[in-house]
Image (cartoon, rainbow, N blue to C red; front, side, top):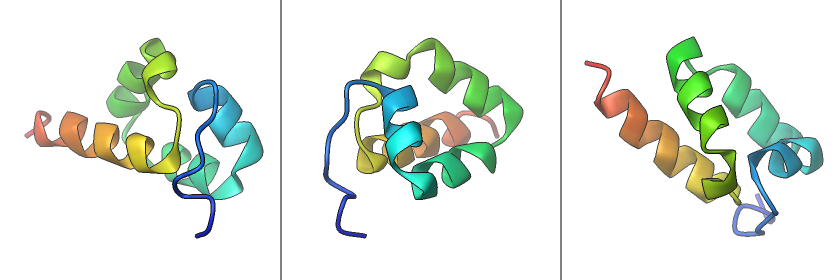
Length: 61
């Protein structure tokens, strides 16, 4: 994906502009989506979204 490294203001802008990021987010576990939403300002690219989700899911086990 060519926009994988493109940065946005926050996670909500990212999902509005990148359908793939929105689909990825919607397939995450509810608890992970909740945690990410409370810190949406930290997520400004698809790469950062994936990294953050991976970090959160590692802690879920």
